[in-house]
Length: 125
Image (cartoon, rainbow, N blue to C red):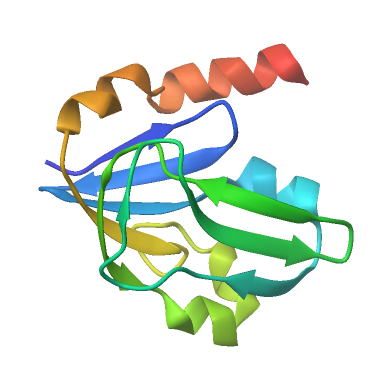
């Protein structure tokens, strides 16, 4: 079953089977502003929860994107590097940065679902 999960750092994880797509939320995109560059990792790299999996640079700042789940990077979205506007797409479509074959699905239990993330956004705004 596919599902969206969120972190307090505004990363989004879309789980489909044992493959997790990782990207950033609309809130993070709005905070960054106009993007100028995205750096992605190498396929085959093993990452732990909390590891950096991408760097997103905007006219304002550079921000690291961290994974909330451990696993092996099995795909990187080179299309988003060539067309930075794709990051505004939902991560279950074209807006994802990396896809991981997750090694521990239980880490997802600590993440927020859509309702909890929306409530969190109201708290911090």
